[in-house]
Each structure stands twice: as structure tokens, then as C-alpha cells.
Image 1 (spheres, rainbow, N blue to C red):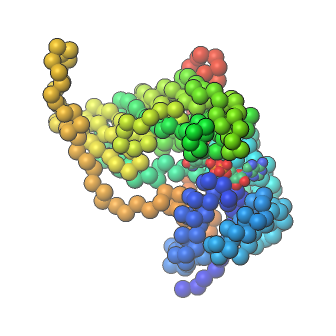
Image 2 (cartoon, rainbow, N blue to C red):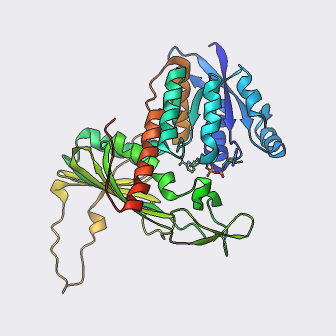
Length: 381
Ligand SMILES: NC(=O)c1ccc[n+]([C@@H]2O[C@H](COP(=O)([O-])OP(=O)(O)OC[C@H]3O[C@@H](n4cnc5c(N)ncnc54)[C@H](O)[C@@H]3O)[C@@H](O)[C@H]2O)c1
């Protein structure tokens, strides 16, 4: 087997997502397994250049993981032809600037979502990437979750008959930062810093809908900032200017009605932090990150409404667990491998900047709906 390497600039390697999911769980895992295997059996190894703003932190990280290259100088890294891919996991607000530079430098670009703060900028990035002829991709991690993979298989098998509706519950309690530290960076709660749950989660819901059910035709959303003051990393109180909950109704292609609650202000009474119930004429399913259970039409109980009698039927016992018949790897890693093969040998990877821009557009429409109280239609392109 011959071996060659592909150079990847990892910008934002010290961040929560950049470090844990992308560097450790994906790129270092790919490096440690010897790279990716192309269709002719050749193994292509990767080499990393990590970028951040603090040289000391970068050096520590590089030493810890045996990474030879690190720098705080993005321009110099982009000017070096050794690096063919630019990856961006910066705070959303800093993303467009870095990606534009990378496109101008002729790099292929892979990025965290959302690709930009406005759909105008997101579509501009898609246009610039197309004009430059570079490969481009956006993280679509939720589609790679075992629970959603099982759901995809159920849909493709025809299990549901006609799909009628989708109901999603996403969220958990994010501590306010006063008596326990918050589990998310404080910029998430300030709209002036690119925060807000709509901007964070609607891009995910857009690609989940698009790829499993059908495109989003319109959205109605009501947002809330339930916790108006939080305490930041510095221990000081700050005003939460961004939405921390969003209650959305989405009309999907084919007449499917989807409702999703997204909240950082909800205490969990479900098996998993995200759950979707899908109801169809022939059957229903409830899926989470990992699990999936089904109830076919011919095993559906016959509830009757009687407020005079205490409930004796255990409805949760009527469902059948979908077995785990596949080996699921970390979804971020799987998508990284697909993107690498897309760059190396033009293997398919459909989750491009245009898909990312449609996600940003849905977030924007959700915010517009909240501001105007109207349902917002989305274009078909
Ligand atoms: N795919 C997912 O499931 C998922 C989950 C959470 C976050 N995200 C996305 O990942 C991105 C990063 O989120 P995070 O939670 O890791 O945030 P974070 O605050 O932990 O990390 C952000 C990174 O950006 C750097 N940074 C901050 N301000 C900067 C600036 N002005 N210029 C250059 N660099 C700057 C920080 O040093 C850090 O490396 C966001 O765009 C977010 O929407 C995706």
C-alpha cells in the first residue's frame, strides 16, 4: 500500500467542539488508524496544523497529542501549499472571515454550522466556493446519530406508510452560572456575539427535515429568553440578549407537519436529550440519539378517554425496541472520513455550503416569524 498525506488546517482547535468532537474524536482518531482508505485500497494519512489565538494553549495541546504543527498565524498557514483543507470550528461570528480567506487561498473548506450569521452571507459563501471550484462541506452530525440512522432505515423500508407528523423535543437545563457553572459558553446567550438557540438549532433541524422527510416549506416560531440574566465565565452577571428557547412549527413537503421544541431551559423527562416521534398511517416511531422504538398499526392499543377512571394501561410497554444491527462510529468522524474522500477522490458528500445556507435561512425565517408573529414561507430552491 502506498501512503501519502493530506494537510488539514484546524481553526478553533481549542474550542469545545473543535477540540472534543473534531480534533480528538475525529481527526486524531483518523490519524491514529492510519488515515482513510480510498477505493483503490490506498491509505491516505492526514497531517494537522492547529490554529488558535493563544500560543501557550496551542503548544500544550500539540504536545499532548503529538501534533507537530501549530500557529496563531492563519494567513501564513493559508499561504502554505502543504495544507489543502481548511476546517473552521470558531465561534459563529468569526466564521465567514476565515472561510473567505481560505476560499481565496484555494483551500477546500469544511466547517461547523451555522456557516454564517445571515443567509445573505451564507449564500455568498456558497457562491464563492462554487466560483473557486473548491470542495466544501458543512457538519450535519445529527444525521449520523444511531437513532436517526435507524429512523432513516424505517422510512426507507416503508414502515410508516404515509408520514403525517413529526414531534421533536430537544433540550436540557443549562445552569445559569450563579450557583453552578453553565455547561455551554456564555456567547450562546448573547445575540450580539452570535448566540441564540434558533441560530444554533434550526440549521440542524433543517438538514434533518430535508434529508429524512422533505424540505421545509414554511415556519412559525415563537422564541423566548426565559432566563434574562446569567453569570459568565468571568463570574460576572451579564444580560442574556438571545433566545434560550424556541417553539417551532414547520410545514414540510408532502403535507407533513413538524413541531420541535428547542430549549436550554427545560428539565429532562425523556430517555435522551433529543427525541422525535414520527406518526404515520402504518406505524409510529420514537427515536433519540441512540435508541429507537416502534409501534406498528396492527399492534396499536385502543385507548378510550375516561376521566372517571385512573389509567391502568402502560402505554410505554406497547412499543418495540429497534435492535442495533450495525456498528455506529462517532458521527463527526464518519462525516470527516466522507469529506476527506470527497476531496481525495471526489466521493459523494452532499452536505455542502448550499445545504448549510438553507439551514441559516431557516434560522433567519424563525427569527422573522417570532418578530412579526407571522408564518414565514421559504423558497423552493
Ligand atoms: N454540530 C454541533 O452539534 C455543534 C454543537 C455546538 C456548537 N457548534 C458550533 O461550533 C462552533 C463553536 O462552538 P463551541 O461551543 O465549540 O464554542 P467555544 O466557545 O467553545 O469555541 C469557540 C472557538 O473559537 C475561538 N474564538 C472565539 N472568538 C474568536 C474570535 N473573535 N476570533 C477567532 N477565534 C475566536 C475560541 O478560542 C475557540 O477556539 C459554533 O459555531 C457552534 O454553533 C456545533
